[in-house]
Length: 394
Image (tube, rainbow, N blue to C red):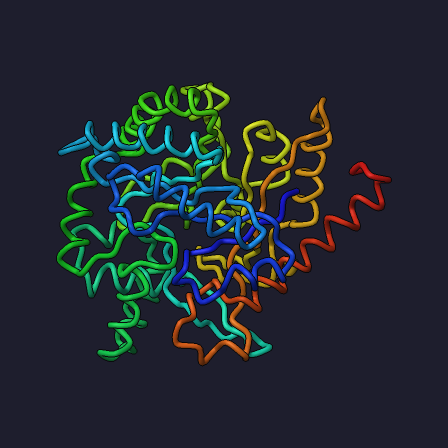
């Protein structure tokens, strides 16, 4: 597997030098300065690539070329923006960058309610608390029909939780949910997210899936021509938020997408933490079934709770079978007839350790020490599995 690292560009507090010293060979990055919906200039792509290569690294994966809401809803200026997306893929292909991650989540990208959940060892983790999210949805955002989105036990907990929140706590919760997290694709204020939810409310799961398929039918020919594989990231969390549709939360969702757009350029990002937040997703079985479609992997672990809440645990300590998943992915690589296949993986998120907890530039989930710890653990798993298998996974 190719060890990679998410880098947010020159403004990232983690430098390329530090990334190389952590042992990663590939960089996962994007052009954050280009407005969503506009084409990425070839000159800007080449300049970003040159920065990475000057540090002795390779730009292995684009994460992400984001999709404007007009594309997702097939409204407004979506046709021009799809043309821009096709041009971006052409430019990336010319630059020799051939793996492009994206997602199709409505309104909010990956979402958490807590960014500094304290672990038993005093490190800090990311957490999604269902009662806190429901309290925000019902009593702060005051979304119409919000109560219909939650079972009675969550409604009771949410009401109790809201009574405990003071002004600063409500502001912090709202910021975490709607103001945009690292690598996310949008930020809202309260009025803005209400309007966005209403705009997407016209779609059920199947209607929204048709929009995703329509997007891929428009851009996959450009991806094929450029030698690019599009690798969709699953919903995070993998269940409905704000009553909105979800179209990539389960293995069946992946099957439907592959059947609708069977091109080899229609690939998958297997995010263990996103898919794994649902107990009915078998990550090892998914790696085995969709192996030929998997070109990028986010390796992280979670601890699930009965009400749908979860927190991000240490990479090898959670409800996901990370060792089994890595073994399955190594088997996919080993099955390549040419013996050349190498799936890009990155340690996804990481606990904030004591040395970085006071750093004002820290991006939640993207601490240096926490991800370096995770990468080292994952590297050990990979080497051990290869050794036990005599160079092949048993």
